Image (tube, rainbow, N blue to C red; front, side, top):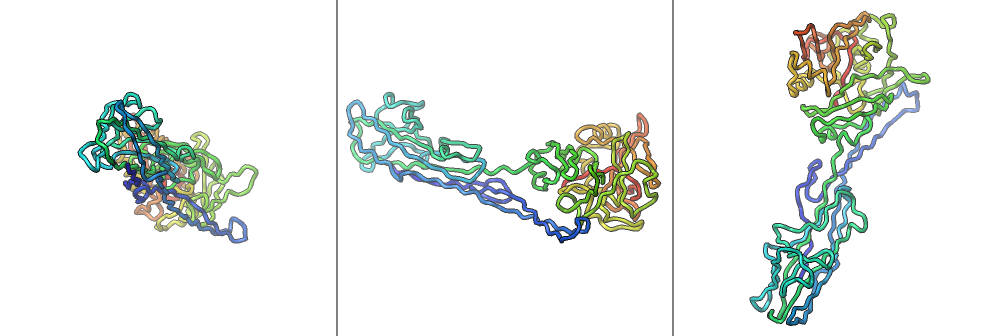
Length: 441
């Protein structure tokens, strides 16, 4: 009996890697710092991806099993063992299958029309196996009929990296021959097939902090998936979710400011934030006395204890990149964590549409409950006054048709019968203070 070994090539997931190949992605941050104060540093982050192909090998301890049998009238039983060794670097394990090399399982005589069948329906032992039959087993006690090519037997299915013991697989082939069978040589080829499992793609469930988010991780996350992550800049936590628009969104308003326990500045860098150069976060003020009125140039943050909300003028929201009363420059950077950014006007519109959030009471009730959790927290006027009217507005990075404004997400509840939920292109003046929701890049 000859044995064949093979690797089955099948299409597997992970960034266009096919066959028995799976991919492992790693990230390496390379920071270049001049030997000067951090507040003056200029950094660039280089993301290096490594596509590490899986390795899979299948070895048999022999290429042929030779049975030399002297039959008896009652039937003589004999068995032999073959060991299939599978080696792979896949952390998700492997599967091993065995079958005939076609859709017939009888051993064929080379000199006559006689065969050694394998057609019993249930497991047998050496004592109960019928004469002139053969089969396989994994314990050298119980034997089953040889599976056909279109329905192979699964010998191993691991969901983790194999241990030394789990790499080896013993298979016993046994047959019982009596004197009624014509003498001669009988053969049959057996196929062993090993398939490496694709390495799972990371999702938000594998993350612990906001800065680990990537487009690939969000894409791999199931719709509706949620997770609470830590912002490494100040150790505050945020709930996030995978929305129906295919993006990951914060369920909480951003709450970073320049207050540092023990004193000092909170400096954002490309290592931890959605910035191109270092940005010193201003300390939040708590009254109009600390607010620079009507300023488009001074980054400012306002904290209101009654709403437990931080409000950012657009100079602060853009990490100091968008200033001046007349500014139509596209906003590429923000005060959001690394891997996140301010959403666009159209992204808010798409989010509302994807979740059927209409500008009425029904839409309002969806927007103000989980996973969105938008609250009517008002805003801060250009003069530094808290406007606590029953409304909420959140910055987008989109330039509106007025150079002093940016578009917003607006939610309002005027009365028991009057509601509004919309992406408002006209937006708010950039010298106002509004809360921020970040979306994954």
